[in-house]
Length: 234
Image 1 (cartoon, rainbow, N blue to C red):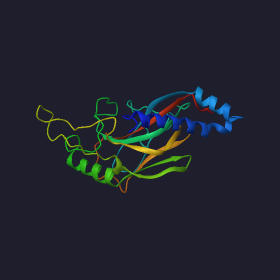
Image 2: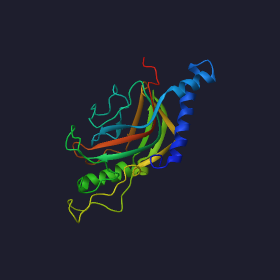
Image 3: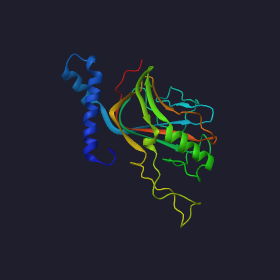
Image 4: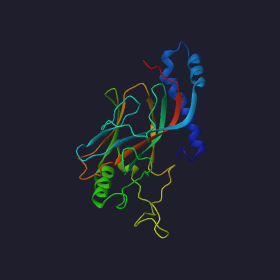
């Protein structure tokens, strides 16, 4: 993955600059002027973190990309990091996780690449692992145009070799997880997220979850190259 391989990270950075150039070329009189603009951008590796609360009434869940948008449950969680209106992100990989916070204000919870029967009840784990991960899909819309039509959530399911099977103790470890890789998959061609546009990442399930805890969330993390102050906000 790009977070653990310097060569692929350099290639992703060069590719991101080309995407910014292609996206902005029509705003400039010459190639040189456009490249001067791209080279003047404040670029950095970064990520966007979006969250939505799951429920047993819906099978379509929409994330909010920028601070002015509303997600399906119209809640902005304190652990989100949305894309600012004036910024853009070339996403070259992304991950989709589940979590079970104690409240909507909770900031002390872990992200999981599957639902175990300790963090979730047996029924909740069956619904998340079966309906959500095994049979759900991810899509992205922008101004009603479907820019990423279908990618299975099964790509993000990861059941580690070391799993929590009892209350945490000396002989009962937590789930194994490597945050830089587990649950993340590549996004090629890269997705250019522009803060001032109406991007709508969505999770689509084949049916509503049979059961889900009150504050259970899905979390999506886009990783890539961020360009600060790269768009015009109308």
